[in-house]
Figure 1 (cartoon, rainbow, N blue to C red):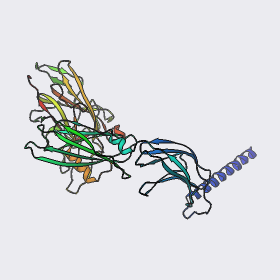
Figure 2: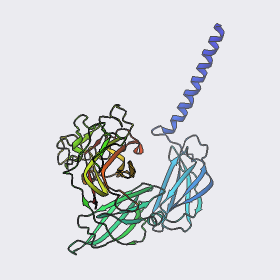
Figure 3: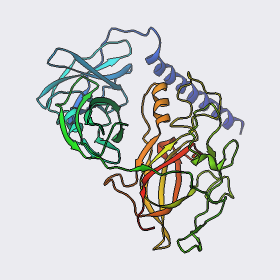
Figure 4: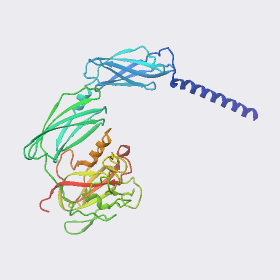
Length: 442
């Protein structure tokens, strides 16, 4: 037995020594000041796949012990060199930024830890349509309620700038020309354009242009003239909300009907239920928002992973057109120098559904589900401006129109902004504002 134990100890020592030796050899790849004069072998080209404005080159990396990366470069017609690099663990490299579909020469080579470069392989490639043209061809605009939206797709999720120019006449027939630039990496994005001067009396003329991070630009596209629709803010002076866990409403006949969906709990911590419809937007200087404290659908559990519902008696019958959601900025203590704070993160709702009570079917009628767009890579100040403006959505976004008449509206919070709109911390909203028109005959 003693000999067996000694053999096991000796074997363990050999294994540990081998692991340490391998670790030491591998760590040399990242030593500061590590150097040699022997260049690595070049990678082996396998194939390439064309992409929009680029190519994906597949290769086999050489087996040099000090290999660091596989690099690729090409030169534009202006003589600019564009360089791309991937880890030696990869089996492909993405090259982007081509301005045309013409054949291009890409140089592929290996780099070791000392900075030595291998022989360069000249690979002739033909990319697909430039990315800026591909994105520009997906852009479309839709006229809506006192506003319009621009929608585009960006399948490769490259950084793109969307230049939007629009021209309109206000209600007094005074002309205005304005421009906006959006920066985006989203696969699909929709941006609403609101302007206090918009009027349903006159159309809005729109033009767009797309530019990528490499300076390539599309031609300017004329999106034509958009006719806008008119609606009004629904006054809140007659609005009422049920008590927590109350799932009943009063129908046109004055009868109480159980809808099966209870009002949520909103008096957690500093929050109060009435603050969501008091026409006061939380600016961070004082408390004005609802807080569910993590309670779920029934108000009996602190499982924040369940939806919660906020139900509003509008006081009369309306046809709804759009909604503006204002997020919580912060509890208190904000000043003019405060930045982003809670906007588009923390406990704010990022995804929600909207419902209307249908008295003909005696059931909640789904209107739509909306995701509040999370703006990427903006300065804190810009997040603050967008958050204070509020996030707008149409009741029928793909075909802007009014809903059927209703007196009861339900806002169902589904998720926070976290984890691609699956986060469970959807606990706060500052204010809801609804637009539409008075329903006739009710």
